[in-house]
Image: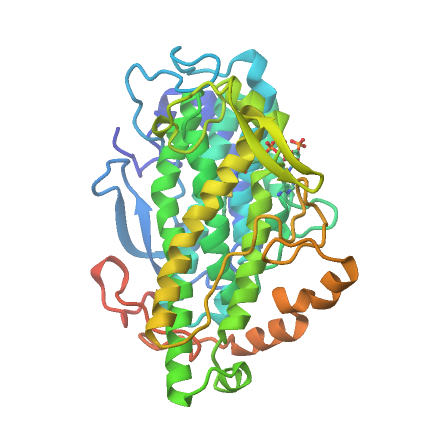
Length: 469
Ligand code: BYC
């Protein structure tokens, strides 16, 4: 179905045919816009940003590009097309038709999954709200704002489900999604990573590389859901998500490229000399990777989880790319898990968070390999690595245990003494902050990052992606 932009809320869910739902969402819309004004990107409200807006859910040509002032962005509700005769693809009800309504017995758990997913979207916008003031280029500024408006749209996606399928408590949850705030002491966001401050662009690139990739995994597993509207919503969100990870992957790649240039110019790999030259030394980048990767690993939940077992068995949440597996019921298999008490055989259903976490880490490796090849080609021995799955965990069996980035348990005092070798210290953060100087001449880049290889939508890198008013 085509998207009608003449409507107050652009949508492809035939909102005009359900006046009660339309009114409820139109009632929520001003609250969302108020939240955007107060908690969204600070300033830049009058700036024209070269943004893409979803105009259909067709695989080719789903987006349109043009200069838009962010408060005028058309946040809409788009579901991927319904797959005819779709069947539940895993769990005990495998092979039965998917549900178009919420089954009564799964109502509260589905609502919780949708609220948890929904909560991360505005949280990330809040985390990033000050970054515009220190953008390394107009190209990057535009990418930040693109991500922000799309996270806003992902909030709309979850709010639509809450309003359309969960009645009054769904509407109350939608209000709460705007009432919790990232880092708030009284009403924080639900998941840990989404309360971490993001005050510099190195953190933004790490967040979009590691945390948005958790988003990819979670959305893929919800796209398998037997609750068809959730599946369709997540499938379309994944289309937009790819750009967010692109920003992380190319952002970190450009930081490394610039560092290697500086190392070559100076003829040294001495971190202090590289910092004096205004670039990010590789050991410092490694600390940021350790921080954001370990934080994002927590987002998969406990290694042993009865929630994950019942979500899977009941057909609510599958594994990413469920059809690529052979066993979709998992009643007879187990997984060996390493816990601080030793190895345990755990029913596979209860270990699914760990299954996802391990495949997520493999996905994270891909960028690391590419960057290490660049470092190797430049003739340096340093290699970037992912921290071990047990490092700096705040959820699960390894919570709070003194484990180094290689995964070795060590005495608590040694861990505390050496922590700043592994994650950014206050001095590291102060240095990174000192690099964050706003650059807004079209085509110019801050000194700590190389230009991108190409611009957005076939435009030149020096295109004026944001017209600052
Ligand atoms: N922080 O049985 P357990 C994205 C809670 S990112 C705080 O181990 P379960 C995005 C958990 O909620 C993707 N609390 O876990 C990226 C539970 O609490 P309740 C977001 C945590 O349920 C960038 C309790 O611990 N989407 O889209 O198997 C920018 C026991 O949990 C944490 C989703 O996460 C934590 N890290 O799995 C923008 C998908 N971890 O319920 C967007 C929806 C666990 O007992 N959520 N807890 O009060 C889920 O599928 C699951 O809730 C989780 C946890 C995977 C998060």
